[in-house]
Length: 315
Image (cartoon, rainbow, N blue to C red):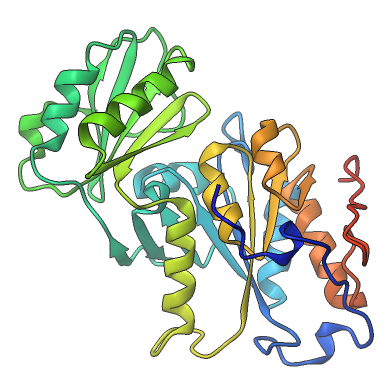
């Protein structure tokens, strides 16, 4: 895992005291605008539902002047399926495990795609895995190229069964693999690295391995987005943005590594938790603790000597 840019994971952190940050204009070094980079599945979305408590918390977060970034392996189509009707409002999205950046209107801010013809090679080789479901994601919709499993997945609910011939003229962003046997993930990642390492990255997420353009990740996507927002002509040009990343799985580790504050969902794998500052029982709890910090000027989950004081059982 890359060296963290967050001093709290490299040594004890300082807990600010004195005047509360809310006494200073938001976006200044003494009161930075916060960017909540949140995973979706297993973090906000459980069994196809988003808890109303989390929806209301995200609304409070934005009302306080902070930003919500959906940072997910989902495509834009799958993201819409997940958030439509939930009441969630976000400012930006890092999609396809970091390959595509969108604003709230759905406008593409940046995108990376796979080389032409690569999907055919991947399909030929990985079709030997059985059972497996092989998807192909584009900004114009999701396709299912092979399906030999008994059950479908809720993570890519809106797709069209297709062949690679129907990809003509489309920019392919990623190749999500839904695995019946999660133990196959390491074997597939090794195959991808050996055969297509110059072009593809295999990123694991529970029972998926997402094949995305080499060099992209949730972390690179978040870093690129913040740079665009604060750079010349950006929506927050010259501002001080502080990032908080929350997620539950291995594909979240890259955004945890680059965030100022890294948060794992309770129940995340041990190696995911090990790379974070703290765990949280919910996104709502995380939001409320940080909004409380704005009111008091005291970090609620870390003492001056770096000890974790977060009450894990709190909601």
